[in-house]
Length: 334
Image 1 (cartoon, helix red, strand yellow):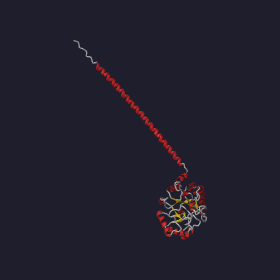
Image 2 (cartoon, helix red, strand yellow):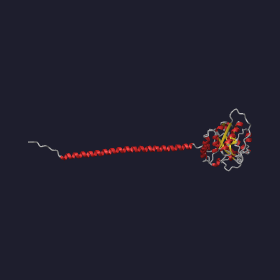
Image 3 (tube, one colour):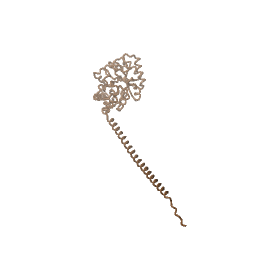
């Protein structure tokens, strides 16, 4: 008997084909998804990198603007910078040094008469800057890099930190307020002609406590006080008891300081030139020339100025002229 052939069911074959097609479609879909993912990732990465580059450009641009601004600021003249800083102070304090003089309408007293000297060394010039009372003033004076003697006002409501400022300096003076013939902006604790010996001694003792290293004082205003022999006797007695020397600002031609100091056996030392009786820069420059001239004639000279912008700028611009003298602190003359 012949064997019959076994036939595979047609349904099974169709199922396998369907499965194969389905798997192929799934594989195609997965491939598309994967390719799309990586393409999108690459594109996203490219966009992120582009954004980072743009951000760097923006930052560099901002830095460039800042640098240009700083460069522009550095190109400002020192005079403008000083005006900006000192402009924050009370303008009434620094209009000129004419407030120091008895009569601001007339010129300050003439330089004291001294014999001329033949010099074998450089003449000495001491420049005192009065009315120092703030950190900004100290900084601007020191920025000149000149040997200038700072004379600090005693502390007050407007200038409470002068003892601390002075304590940071190797050398300083005190600009001691004294009674004027006529002055509307008198400092607190101003020494007056009718003050007793005890009161004056107490005030000088207080100054010594506030400024322990003080060795020199000069008078702030004081046209009335220094013109009184009685008052000056009280003052010099108190100063000598505290080992403090007196430098006469010579705010009046009637000063009795020469006579009183001679009676005590002390040397009379006084201001020769006021640099800024008028505040114009050209005037200050001419007064610096005058101070140098006097130093050359007599071997030494003392000039007094104030920390307003034109004075400081004139000093800065006169450095070549000042090289002709030995610019020293007051203790190197007195």
